[in-house]
Length: 444
Image (cartoon, rainbow, N blue to C red):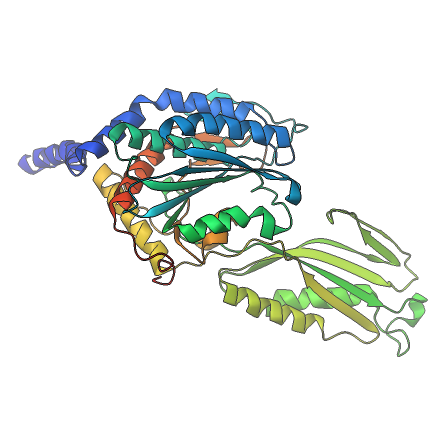
């Protein structure tokens, strides 16, 4: 009985013990976040009710103005970078000048969603502990977490010394081209930073918050196979060979059997073949003609490839080219890779060290440690464009689900939890002495 009572007493003291590990300023941050819960949810509602599909340029700009109104009172210098040259709305960039002594932080999020104005899925709806709406989790919940954390830092006095640059892209869901232009400002910000924090969604497994330090790349490929056309009775013959469809089928089958390796996926998303085959301008729709008694002259396939490192990507692409180049008799084929893809963010010691810092924050808050997330369970994202220059951490946004589909939702309690984590982590990073500029990624 005595042991049981002692165990109950220890359990009752756990929150107090966790709070005791926080400084007075950190406790003030926790209190501020909790006090502003409804304010944060109200902001989320306003953001979601403003449609900002990637191609709705006025809507994206409107969300940018809403963010400007929140950031300028916190001491940020905010500017809008138009992206007409990449056929996109633009990006919001906000800079907070601190003491210059601590780590320079880059905070990354995005203003756009996949839901354009003609989507039937519109508007914010609160259902108890959840909210539903377009972009409510991806990524409007994330930028609310970012703001909530910054306001908590401001209230506690830890923001004044923090050197922070925020880049909120207006086209994360459908990046403008050329990529060299649409991600130019983000890449430049990464070169100025010591740490990059990604406010995309928090990953969870079995209800447990997970830590994420890597993202795989995302790129597209296209194969065009050709063959000698003629009467089907001559197929396989010396003069006519196998035709384009058999050649394409050979290639796709070889990909399936010869390419697989750890952390690699490659998908075939669209195929067309026959006497004629064409793609529309966006290359997402195909049309073909043909008859059963005509050897197909052309066959086209499109798909994607996702890798965990630049080295893996180059190795796999070389293997794909080698498979394509073999050719069945009487056929030919070529493969091309879209240069507008997203790079990978490999797991590194520097990234893991950031997650370790976050787990110290978790312990001090009395929260469970966040285990590493399998990179296969994370899609591509903007932070990958700076991964070669700066250590980074992913998933400081909200927990939710159903992204990119009608019914997308967010767990509202995750706003507070994530804002507390982010505010304390950023405040501690702001006190860490920065290394010589340009050396943080090399140290990984």
